[in-house]
Image 1 (cartoon, rainbow, N blue to C red):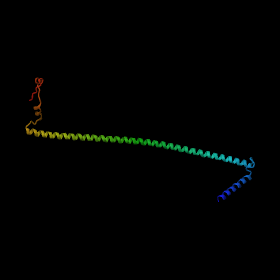
Image 2 (image 1 turned 135 degrees about the vertical axis):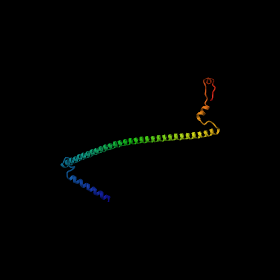
Image 3 (image 1 turned 120 degrees about the horizontal axis):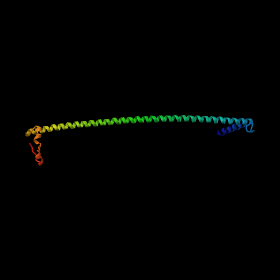
Image 4 (image 1 turned 90 degrees about the vertical axis):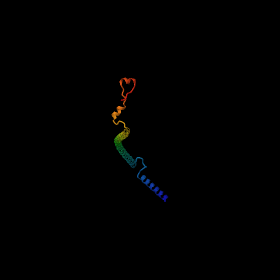
Amino acid sequence: MKKELSEKRWAFAHEQANTVRASGHGVFPNSSAVVTARSRTVETNRELAAHMRHEYMEQLMYRASQQQELVAAVRTSNQMHQVEHKESKERRRQYEASRLAKIEDEKRAAKEEYRAKKASQKQRIRAIHDKVKTDYDQEHGKILDKKSLLRATRPVMTSSLAKSGHEVTL
């Protein structure tokens, strides 16, 4: 089958070559058919080259426009990224400021609570101490008046006695 096909092809090619020779190609180098065929080939090649140059230039223009669009898209993307970054930074700064203010308020409230507890504790201790002292003084018959208590226990120094270092109690 392959052999028959190749024989058919060979026969066709020889028949075509004979047709070309019969029309005058290859017989005379400057025959009208040869000159016409050459000029047609040259013109076809020129047209093909012009068409290829035109397509090449169109491709160059298309790629240039795509590249410009890409550059514009990248610039826009970078600008948006910078804006988002600034906004994110501002949000973080505001969050940190509010967080620090909240911590400061909590510290202040804790200090105030501590002071209030301390004052309350001191007041309870003072009340208990005064009650214990009053009870003790009542049991042992001591003076209840603080002023008189202070006068009774305070040392009095006179000018002549102060020089000698002796104390006098009233």
